[in-house]
Image 1: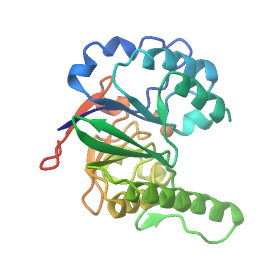
Image 2: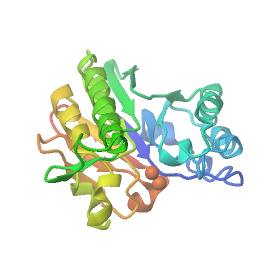
Image 3: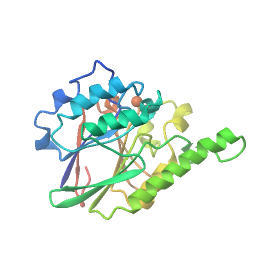
Image 4: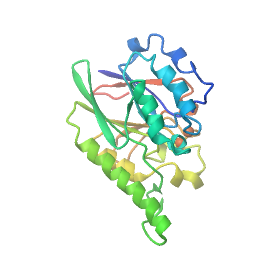
Length: 241
Ligand SMILES: [Fe+2]
Ligand SMILES: [Fe+2]
């Protein structure tokens, strides 16, 4: 059995130190790893990420993170990733990591993902160059995410995203903005890549539980949704909870 702590959209500012680490007491008795589903900061400022890194350094279980759109805002992605990595956080962007937990292998493929929309209400790779670039970025990044999942030869495969792969966890958000909240390409990647479960954030007004068309469980772990510092999920090959 694998126990996963997960949260997204912690949106640290430079004064947020200890907001997360205050909840790390005994976390190792409840979880084997801690997944962060992007929007780690307000604007992607290095000082904001340093405040978060200060907290994550105190986490006694492995921390695996993807970035969100907010973390890209100031264009200092390389610097904020380095700040996280210096705090021993594993940062994934169209890449994977394998953990050994309780004598089992757990593969985590991570990607920010992107928007584009969902079946019946999505953009298309047609028309102006800007529209084509938008949709191609969505499709290409989902394609790499799928390759990463396929490449995992592990007991469990987890997809870690910022953008949503399904509308099911967006309920409560305005339908007009669904195309900016996620993409069905990500759901196809999860289903074809054999993921056991996926976590995402970004949709602050959404709901926690959903699944892809192919039946992959999806959990929106944005803090405003789960209303806790993090939630704990148990992965068991026979029953996912
Ligand atoms: Fe957010
Ligand atoms: Fe976001």
